[in-house]
Length: 265
Image (cartoon, rainbow, N blue to C red):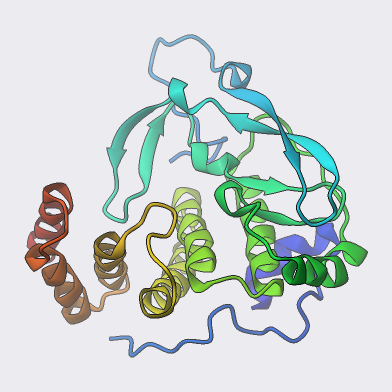
């Protein structure tokens, strides 16, 4: 996993975790723009990040200290389209870049909706393995794709240290897959597609659903989309067909599955 966490040298966490080489203990039979995610229409006024961020306070559940971080005013954004793997393309900025919360005091990092969901035992793991090595970093208001990647990698490392559920780790890997596509890094996009596939496959079996609003049908669709991305056509068709015949999937999700199947053919 060295190729995943090399960006974390600056945080002092290059050697953490020492005894957790795999993100997911699960095996499968496998057959934009870079500048802060901002999109600007021609003739539009200059982009000002201050119009889209605000200061939000958090209380760290690990070290119990308070801190502030910048969050996105999502009501000011517009979804322009949704890609085949459910990545929403937003105007004028990608809110996913800002979804990780990092405590500057102890180094605990998580996607904001998971941030408070930590047990005392997991907090002790973070304090033992992350905090003694952690070097805080300062970020500008406007994050670029590389900054977003390193923040999510820090969250992924934290999720490994605290033995988070498969769904939490898979969700982080999904976002990293999107970011590497934005960056144009095909190899790492494929790597995180494989990790996301492993994680959500395990989550369907072992975790409580939904995960971050993703129910079983949506995760099944995602698995089909990921298999397609990884050139496993038969597996992709199987999962997408499961969505089409599902009695609980929404009409919109079924339409997406049909469209993806037709595109593959």
